[in-house]
Amino acid sequence: MSKSCNTFLEKMQKYTDEFFEETGKTTVTTKELAVWAITTNRWEPPMDLVVKKCQEDFARAMREQHINNERGQPVRVKHVARIRSGDQQLYLWGDIRNMPQEHMEISFQQRREQIVGECKQLKRDVDFYNEQNIGAEKYQMVFDFREDIEEGEFSAEYSPVRTSIGDLNSYEVEPKHSKKVAK
Image 1 (cartoon, rainbow, N blue to C red):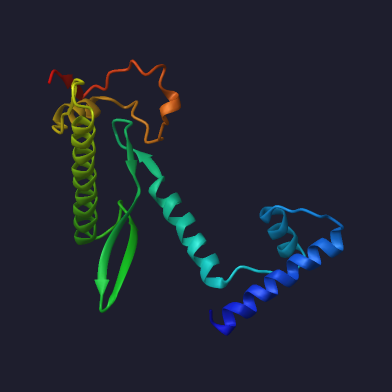
Image 2 (image 1 turned 30 degrees about the vertical axis):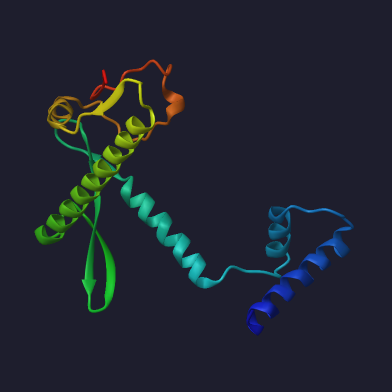
């Protein structure tokens, strides 16, 4: 272990001892210790950690920003394109209403690649599940999304808000574009 790491750990250990001494407590959670250390100005996050968290917050906010088109359907406002500049990889965000066409084409293609990657992984997962459950009905996933996309063209009720499995009424729900097939 390097000397600087050892020194840092020793400093954190010293703060832990100070906490016990100052509060008179004999036990503590790391969350309680962290709040105490921050509020007593003993610890502050490194700037790169603060910047990274801020970047993540901005990215999440931009991904979730939507406007409605003329049919009342939600459209994502901010789009990202991953590009190379010299030896650096950059994630450039822009507004769909005024972004250059080249940027939008890169963004659309990269999002499509992500969807294809998710479908490939889902197929592997379904195949593995079927292989592990010999004797049970095979689960077959349909990867033709034309009906879903056409249906979305007529529905202004689509919401980009994510739902969880807890939102389902029961486990008897049959997914629309999957089916069980006999072995």
